[in-house]
Image 1 (cartoon, one colour):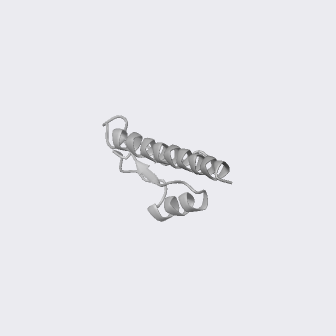
Image 2 (image 1 turned 90 degrees about the vertical axis):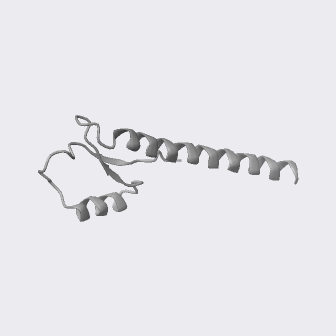
Image 3 (image 1 turned 90 degrees about the horizontal axis):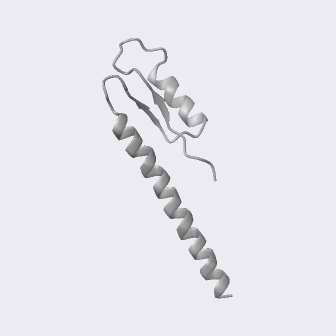
Length: 79
């Protein structure tokens, strides 16, 4: 399975934007990103929340993979 990807934009504490929000959203959709978050490492804005978000996605995928494997094993044993 593919690794979940989250696009992260740093330096959200600055006023200079290089891209419009719609361009970012289009890029995320076109490349199957889980989303986009803006952070500022310098000012500690949304850093922990971003880590928590991507960790949650990874853990849920692992849990779903484990459930699928258990179900496959169940089917195999009951043939």
